[in-house]
Image (tube, rainbow, N blue to C red; front, side, top):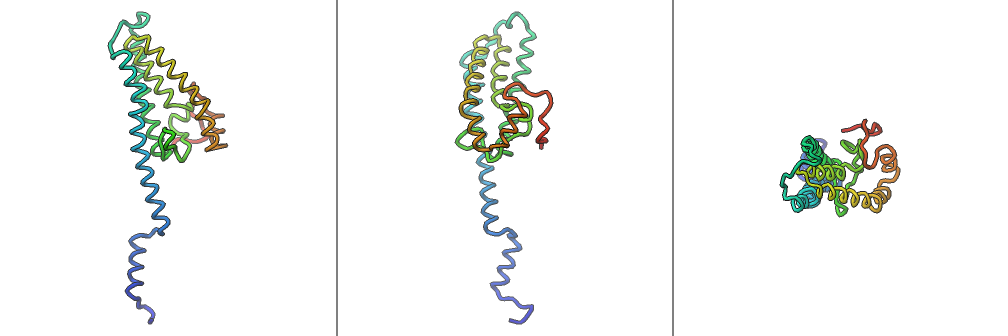
Length: 204
């Protein structure tokens, strides 16, 4: 074949490479990553409604019917504190779920775990921000509505979370992420937030 002339098949191949610069394997990997990220976002949204939505929303409504009673200890300022806890809890839940889906490419649900250990955002201050946020939301409602039973329920929810973390979550994450998770545990407390963010992994 004379130099400078190409067959129809060569021309088609060149056009195909220009239109799609990725190799077939790379295209497949890219498609899988996009699909998994979409599934992570959808799955996290569903789990957000089913888990925190039920534990911190539906059950408190069943207990209190969201009726405002007399301020606890006769201190109206406790209602303000409750509002702060409720707001912080709601923001913490949404932020953490978003990080699971976008950064971890997974969900908090064991059936669709993250591919990467999430150690940014609120995770730089406390190891279990979703659990802390859920309990904060429940306790906030208890203070706003002046309902002791909600406060007791919040304590029971925290106890359940604590046992779940000790018995299942920490052993599972240790097996999945090894030394990375061990370093995270060494630098970030389980329940009481740090005053300064953990500096080993800067936020992104």
